[in-house]
Amino acid sequence: MTATDAQVRIIMREREKGRTQEQAAASANLRSGKTAAKYERLGQLPSALKQPRTYRTRADPFAEEWPVVEEMLVAAPELEAKALFGWLCDQHPDKYQEGQLRTFQRRVSRWRALHCNRVAVLEQVHYAGEVLQTDGIWLTDLGVTIQGEPFKHLLIHSVLPYSNWEWGRVAQSESLPALKLGVQSTLLKLGYVPTFHQTDNSSAATRLLKAEEQEGKDERRGYTAGYLELLDHYGMKPRTTHLRSPHENGDVESVNGGLKRALNQHLLLRGGRDFESIEAYEAFLHQGMDKRNRSRHKRLAEEWVVMRPLPRAALTVYCEEKVSVSRGGLIRVLRNAYSVPTSLIGRQVTVRVHEWSLEVYYGGKLVDTLPRLVGSRKHHVNYRHLIDTLLRKPGGFRNYRYREDLFPSLVFRQAWERLGQWYTPRKADLTYLRILHLAARTLESDVAAALELLLTAEEPWTERDVEQLLELEPPTVPEIARGKVTLDIYDQLLQGVRCEPA
Image (cartoon, rainbow, N blue to C red; front, side, top):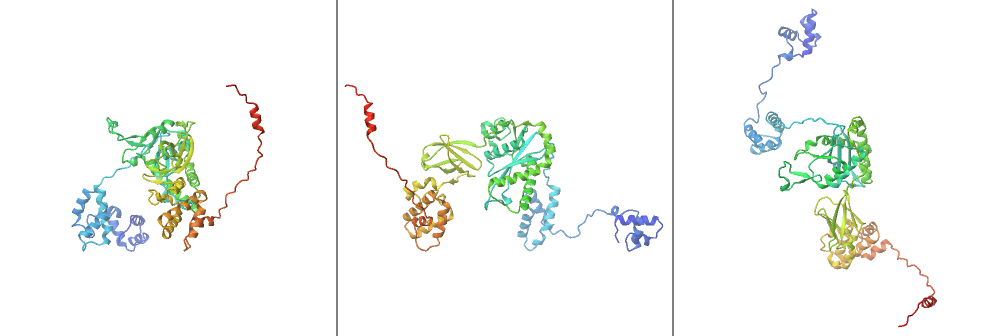
């Protein structure tokens, strides 16, 4: 019978007291005195008698094919055990079964532990007030909605590695305006400026160097002009991670995960993930970060001592471009197309690119505000800008390149398709354009509600039926009082005129 080290110690202690082997075994909760006699004779604890096992308790089912598997692992160490096991099953369908997958995974794991070197994490020493690290963290998987609509977004997240103090702003992409917004908001909240600002090699902060710029340099990427303008304004020095080395931004990456888990818990406590607006959601995020920063004030105070005070003047966070309005009433900004009022056709306008919107200026006056599109080769055409042109040229509607943008919602498209079933293509298009014109000069939501009601009818209808449902009041004509005409004033003017002789 086997015994533990503790039981053998009890046996030895009881034997020193003069107890018999049976009595000592009973005190140690062992049924046989032979076990007590065994360890008394050996004079060693059970743990000292154990020898490492050098044999297998069962046959290795992969022994025959393992040399081939090992060659494949040496050639491609990134191969996963599950994929390799699937390949083995395909090669030997009668020999291996799905239930052996876990055994094969353990065998591959042991091989990797003995033959595959990994990159170790090198713990760094951080100095107070030295650097601010910034990274973008996607929060879309938190399931947040704005007025019921899914909200795709990220957080431009900044962290002081020494104290782990953090702050950030919501954005829709890792663009230069987003980076400017996030970093400047962090500095304004902090009130001080560290020596360095560190980020990864995103296109907002860095750019690919030209061939002539790479001469005599080891780097392949340089800094963008807008990013350097931001750092120069606050007196910070740039610092980036090496290419394909995101772990060098490890502190902010680590805090990213903790913040994401904390926000998910706050959302669970809140009992809902829907917010009235982006501003309300961002206020919720800031409240969560404020709570996390409370425990970091002691080390943050050490950083304040060595950091420089924040400059008073804030930097503009938008980028400015000058573009021309095409004959189609469109402008192209950051490889995307936007419509503007047709009165600007042929003019040059100034566009201020913010993270969430574009501001269009002409002659120093704000003309329109447009939602900023993320990506390239996208378009945003507002039917209100082009409806007058479309009514004058209804034949251009059906094959218009951006026709899909002229359906404000699904019900408008359904209405156009229904009209196409009743009327000729030209009449259907003209009727729909008149309905769209009605939406432009009234409320789009009221027109949509009227269309939903008309779509349930089986009889044909036109824009006049939509007008009747809207119950539009005829425009009031102001009454103009008729004035009394008198010619005396002309006589007075003539009396003051002196005619010179010819």
